[in-house]
Length: 306
Image 1: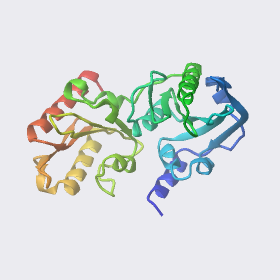
Image 2: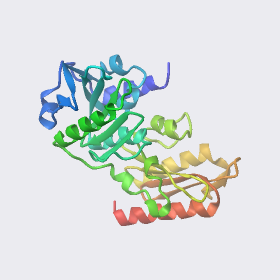
Image 3: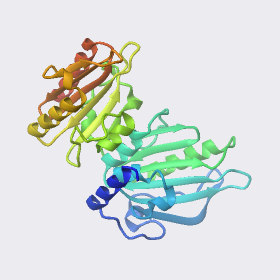
Image 4: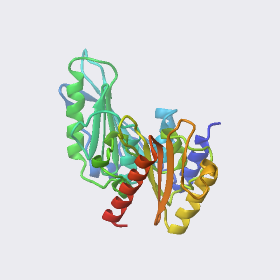
């Protein structure tokens, strides 16, 4: 069995599943309204809803990602038009706006679509987040008309969502575009399994990530290289120091107290604690680049306050 099973068990203990119901919950109805028609595509009249126990029935093999970001409910509608591919609308209710942002950020790669609090559209798939909701809209086939209908549905749904929220604060500590930030590379991570999916570090949780920590991972354009910056916030300076020593002991034991080393690919890794934060650079072309990014992150932490 994959290690995901352990994650699922943990998540269920932290966020007890709700009873399955048909249609859309009253709470969800109050916070947004699903459209019934767009560009000639009409809702087939069948509403489906899933919770944390039944999500695998709908997306077996991908449900773990949503559960890792504290998934609550899913509402699904299917739209049809004669002679055209069906369109599917999925509205995922997460536990918080931070979780909705996290799901969106985890696989972000396309251009902004101009809706919600963050969006992208590419390959016939529209994704956006707003408040604690993450939305995907896609067609089960291709046609010259279908992309326009997908965008229309998305805009109407985004406007109807009556709640908003903020991206995780830990993301704001990342140095911005002036330091070379690649915006679409930003990931908000809740545990070490998610981290390993985006940048493998260790099978073991050597950075001591938990429900009490928050992490942001991003790439930076530095010449021809794209090093990663991992920024983690802990509850206290003591916990951050313990995690830093754990990381150094396993990942970079040769560094001893220096906090940096050159890896076999001749690139640099650097790790440092700043108050209750850990800052780690992976894959820098030279030590100066690594140090510059670390310093830029320290400045952001000071500017944003704690």
